[in-house]
Image (tube, rainbow over all chains, first blue to last red):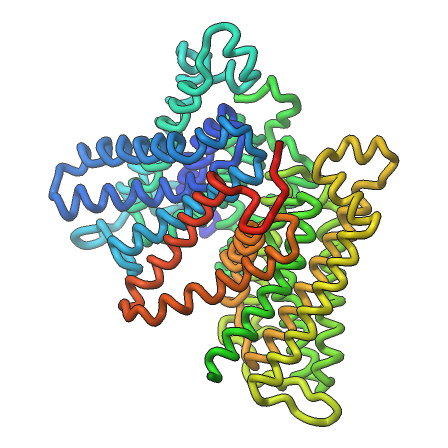
Length: 293
Length: 289
């Protein structure tokens, strides 16, 4: 009885991790560095949606697309103004990581300065009772979250597999120099990856803001779980990141049930460290560089 | 006056943390992001020994540092095989795990309520209670840390560390045991972080998990980077500026809801601009090729 409810909660939390993780994986694959500030793009998405829906009173569906697109713009801006100069200097990964922390801290506190440190909510009206489904209760909003995030993940996967731009992305992920030899501009591909990945992170932030409260620090948890999901799924693999997210969400929620909620982050990182040490290729068993995406 | 002395004591503790992290990150090139975890372990081990068993804080300090060092070895041995970003994540994870344990293992650490009433140090039977006595004590420890780390980095051992930073495969090809060196460096770093944590605990007389968050680790890394990776004088400057500067902002008279995020924004911006314009830090010479 309770098991199903916890698994369902895990799937819902996991679908958010998956959305953050697939975007992270896409950026990691093309740019080859850990874009830690991805988490703050997620938070930005939630706050943009809040501004559009609550403050400017725009239609929620239109706001969703607008906020996701704006999150994409934020991601592109980060790449243009911060990462691109580093790529030109051929900076080591530690520099990318440190700068990424810098961006994270900057934007998170900018959000706090604008909106305040307190939690905000987009929910209006009373809480409705959900549908009963296999012994668990699921609300309409949760169904919406699951459907939209599954559609976005699958859409991204098809995009990378089937379209010409997706093929170019895989080529850059495989070998940046070889890709540029055949006429692909890696800078444009990385830019496209940032636009798409950041829009997905923004979408995840918007979806979660329908379900829970938003606060400026929400990005930290999201990116940590996103990175863990993408590593346990097999770094850079899009289906891997999806499964990794779900796996992590379910494991965490079963942990909350069996142990206690305070140990949630601890469980996630223990899983990460076990994977890093014993199966660094992740569930999908990513081995060589070429197999990825 | 008391306030200025207090800030100087805190600066001294951060200088110890920065020096020890510089050995790991700046000299050996390991992306370690969990330094606060070691000072957390040192602080808690030391405080619990003193509070529960009535031991002298000096024994607490030594045991605390050793426990931190052992943890460093246990974590270092498996995870230092990981490269770059993955090592950063594993050490980051260590930070989160240690923080969670301190917060959730309520029966021992009292969780978020923290440990109050930690006794201070005494020297030759005289209890150190004035802030200036702690300033002397911390100064002695900062000098000790500096001397040890200076000795390590200017010895042949230190040359191997720089070799590992520049080109790990070349160091291996020269017949150097790269993993062993990494673990030793990690353990030394953890040991001094443990001492710093213990000093902090016995000076403030109260600790709770919120002093040892992951953001704290990032702040220490920022001090290393700011002063200059691979520069010991840089660590002094980096820690001093980044501890004292936010205190100065306090006098501008902004409401804290504006001042706190603004200060963090300046930190973030500083990190980005520094990496773009002067990645070697204020006093550093090392620059990637």
